[in-house]
Length: 468
Ligand SMILES: Cc1cc2nc3c(=O)[nH]c(=O)nc-3n(C[C@H](O)[C@H](O)[C@H](O)COP(=O)(O)OP(=O)(O)OC[C@H]3O[C@@H](n4cnc5c(N)ncnc54)[C@H](O)[C@@H]3O)c2cc1C
Image (cartoon, rainbow, N blue to C red; front, side):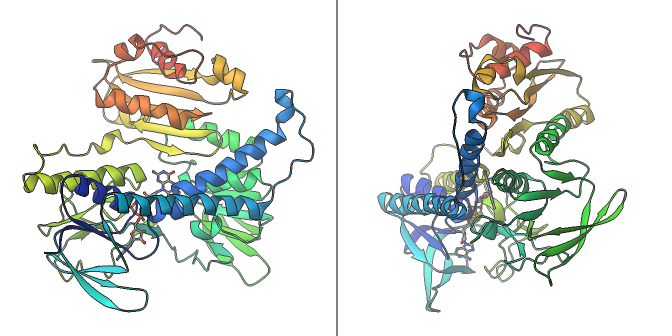
């Protein structure tokens, strides 16, 4: 065999898997059909955060007098905003190229298809084929935007996330369908730059996976910013024949017609599992994803799967963790790793949305905890009572923590406000260490920081809050 491990796909699942495998002493190749770094670095996490930073700077400029600073004539250059974001993505992709070289991983550009156990056929852009052999194969082919029949993405009038972050000109108005992380981030971005946004959500609340209190607060803040929010509403048809789009939307009070320059479909993703040799090799899929066991191995021994094409939350940090787990599981089989690596705890995965206010959460929502039969101790700390938030001029939002009343187990945390996507890591570590409320209160949090809100919310749950 030419290689010990072949990784198909170089996103935040694939490239860390390749690096970890190389660190563990394997000879590794990675196959990529498009750009190193996958969706995350090229069309997902990173370019969107670059766009959101531009929106944040614009917001600061617009509200600069609140801080005693006069900024006159603040204007944005949409082309320059897009160009900056694309530049950041390019730089990150080149960074992965450097990492592959540093870790002596062979990069093979082309479409990878599993021929049989240990064999991957790679078709290059010019159609040339080669077969690469390796003892273990990790499928990390990721996902793409979901295309609903009512909202067929044409890339011009009905767009997906790729077009939304690379439009040549800024639309004056946009309908955003779907209020998950992607829809909410784009709604905030475009609204801040002056596009008239209508956010349409099928479910009764926006950011539907979040705690009800967080969804309510985000809706309130979005409306304050001028975004029109329609929940329990479904786009039933879109007419793209005229200059813009005309969408018919079924709402709880009847059908309405919305007109806009463009419609962004942000209704989820589908895994890239077609044409990669799954059926031919009897590899099982379920609900559109490749079935994996607790070591990330598929139903065919020696073939592993990680990231968005595998079960588990479709998040970059989940993909990375799964990639490392797959590499270490292979190393354990090959006696290059001392113990069977620990399986992933999918109940302790933080989720973040980077609009303003930011949203971050981990563990059970209040409803999930109640439904699971726990008796609860819940504490909430509003940022209006935080010295740091007041100094930063960012007093909207709160931290809400949920503990099990019987043993003090930290069941979940739900945050909305300035910088909360940085605060959630504390709860992730705390829950990993099986920390109770007692240790959170016992740990000294620096003052003044937003992180004090985690401690104060915990104190509030037990009647010991100082600042509220
Ligand atoms: C707009 C947007 C914003 C996002 N923001 C965040 C965020 O802030 N935080 C977060 O955690 N997640 C975010 N995500 C999700 C995140 O991008 C994904 O969860 C993550 O990229 C999944 O990693 P992956 O390695 O499984 O797949 P991908 O990143 O999709 O990479 C798969 C790679 O495989 C390649 N490939 C596919 N098939 C083949 C083949 N047959 N042969 C060779 N190569 C192939 C693809 O070209 C791609 O490069 C965002 C997603 C989007 C769309």
